[in-house]
Length: 113
Length: 114
Image (cartoon, rainbow over the protein chains, first blue to last red):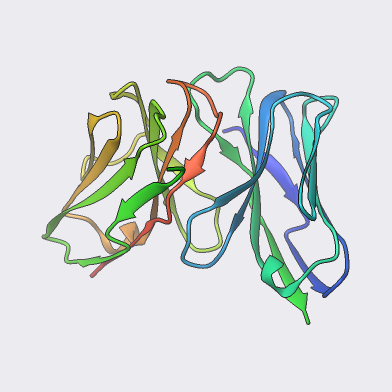
């Protein structure tokens, strides 16, 4: 089935450092979503992107919908310990009208105080 | 109200039991979803309801039976589950009958089958 390639798989960084992760797809997407998931909780939507080229910020988080519509990145600036968790990208293909999201495999972020 | 509420938060059931998971949203979303998630893996879609009608069943075994009584409620009935069905079950909802606007997840039900 359709897959998203999310990288890196994991990151271990020092508090205060900036973080960047990205997702790529072999097909064109019309939506990119970025979620953060804490252990035992459901994914929480961080940023939603609906237009190619769109650059959106949410506090220290910035995400962009790639011009080719096949990729997206998420940046976190000045990381803090509560940024720890698993970050998932998710998207909806232009060939789908069912609401089905395709998920990346996740990026596990650990922040050392 | 911008939440998707799932109950119970935790559930332990035997392989011969019948139980139900419940999901509720009051955001006016007309699409609701059930996902299954194993540890450190992405959520896997199970079912999609669009305007209270089942629109997608991702080849889920019949021991899982979804139900959408109205536009705000979604249930997942469980019967004769196997230990490998233990997972976090997530409910989600979104705007429109089909589409990803406002895609919101609940906190999930942690299911353990013994």
